[in-house]
Image (tube, rainbow, N blue to C red; front, side, top):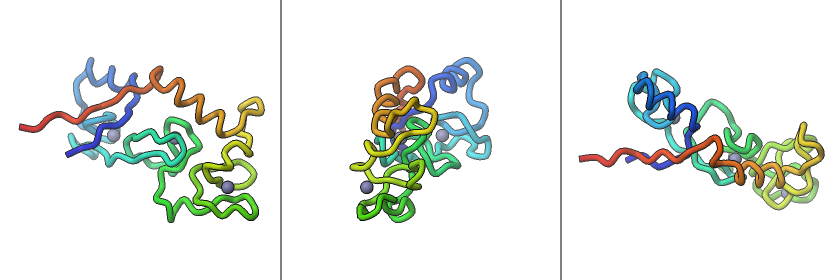
Length: 136
Ligand SMILES: [Zn+2]
Ligand SMILES: [Zn+2]
Ligand SMILES: [Zn+2]
């Protein structure tokens, strides 16, 4: 049974209009999946569950890791050593507690904490929840 997850609204709309083109059941991407759905993964920073893609970082907040804890590594701040939750400019990666210490790129000086909070506030604009079809 598949897990509910967030998918892009525009992509769902495309599927509703054109029907499934053989991609992922949920997000519609990647023809090779032929009617199955991607694994669902959850961002370590913003907590949004989404389709597993080809990147290490979240498609929603853009900074959070969608990697296992061991692959995400530890915070790049000296003396911190907590599990990393996001890719971070300057220090490489940072933990949940240090998100407020690092500034995002092209954000007008906003910290990663702010950028991630903002992406959650505006989540419903571009993303919608896909629920797996009930079997039987
Ligand atoms: Zn998918
Ligand atoms: Zn995220
Ligand atoms: Zn830290």
